[in-house]
Amino acid sequence: MNVVIAGSSGLIGTELRAALAARGDRCIALVRHQPGTNEVRWNPTRGELDIDVLRDCDAVINLAGAGIGDKRWTSAYKATILESRTSTTSTLAAALAELASDGRQRRFLNASAIGFYGSRNDETLDESSDAGSGFLADVCTSWEAATTPAEAAGVPTVHLRTGIVLTPKGGALKKLLPLFRLGVGGRMASGKQWQSWISLDDEINAILHLLTSTITGAVNLTAPNPVTNAEFTKILAKAVRRPALVPVPAFGPRLLLGRELADALLMTGQRVLPQRLLADGFTFVHENLDEALSDILSH
Image 1 (cartoon, helix red, strand yellow):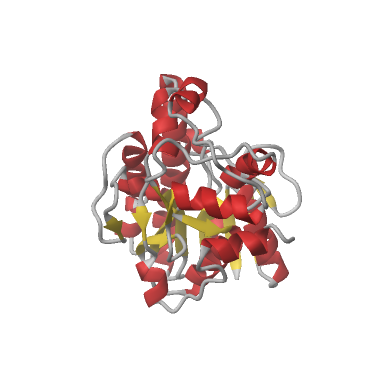
Image 2 (cartoon, rainbow, N blue to C red):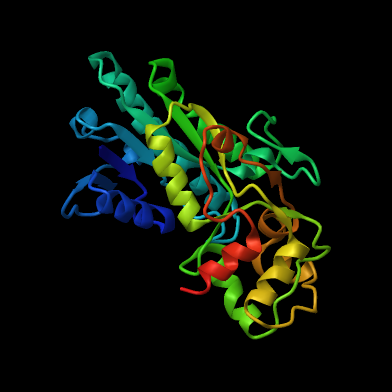
């Protein structure tokens, strides 16, 4: 396949680009810096993209967006989080819509997140569930809506609603491991909040699966067995052979990160199931957290 990727330098993008190359696909990365081999420069903030880059592709994968937890949520950074997602998506959607009349079938896989569902306590959620409320839910709703020009032009479009991606290379697990290995990790506040996770291997495999699937619309990229934060803490502590006895009070993360960011990422959660992936015949490498962490941390 010929695949164009935006956001290829991030945690998921880096692994995906390597996986595509390993199986013999031709991959072109859209970048903002001076382009290197198999890279093309674009400026989504200004809507600038050479449409010819997409002309011969079979799929476009957009993973671009400013990090949700990289900085405190000031008004300015919240605007950056939103704009970095909608501008990249709308630029690609407009280009794909313009090319749609040439008869070539191109799939559009656009990142989203389970933050779409908002904080839902113990409610079991799948792709048919409504959007929730709050900043992240609003961002995801606008992010997904930005694909509308491509969808209206008949471009098969998938919204990749990704959960917590587990890998020691980055993300939440990389931040947690040093604490848990020192024996000072613990559940967050009550520990009742649900955490819908997916291993990096399954995240990449699911995206590759969706490149050739006929699925369109929302797809949850989460393992089939979400856990509460208390369960996650217990399993991670066992995996690193350390105790995790002392809970982390809510005021600590709120003081460090700001209340809104801490509550959105750590104190609330979603119980999300990957119904559409399972119905499409996708097989997870890691279905259960204990097996996933054992495998992930053994490498």
